[in-house]
Image 1 (cartoon, one colour):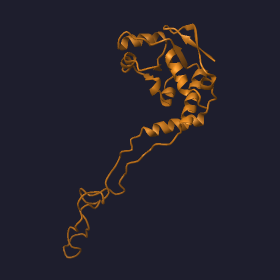
Image 2 (cartoon, helix red, strand yellow; image 1 turned 180 degrees about the horizontal axis):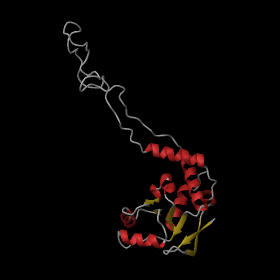
Image 3 (cartoon, rainbow, N blue to C red; image 1 turned 90 degrees about the vertical axis):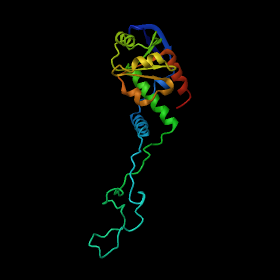
Image 4 (spheres, rainbow, N blue to C red; image 1 turned 180 degrees about the vertical axis):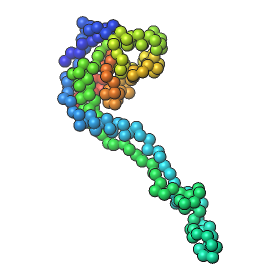
Length: 209
């Protein structure tokens, strides 16, 4: 199949880019996309919330006073949860929230996402996003001409000028192909890929079901 390219002013270009149907014309699989996206988000959770129970707190090995005869309440350790500096009752432990998703499922979900973007005309291809310098104003003017308000910009390799220029723009994201993820693809209303990015993206997914 062929994808129409756009010019720097946002108009349709006479140029097209040939892409594989097996990647950009896949059936929409909502269940698979949901599984992959939730797995990706779960993998980003640190799970480092940890507390110490009474056995993990140092000290408290000796009984503070004898069982009877002191007039005080019975106590076996100064690290009891009811004591100051004691352990925590039902202490939280470090957790691993990651969910396994194999590579074939991950790639199939990404193909399904980009295919749906193509069908809904939310994926655009542009020759390049070349900026003369890391200038937020220059990139903002380019995006205004492209009528892109909520957009993810994707380049083949890391473009430092585009990366630095996009950081302070609201609802504008940036990623190179190697760091593109399914959550970013579905988080923006529009995705603009450079011509070299879409070919590299295609080659990375080639040969997978």
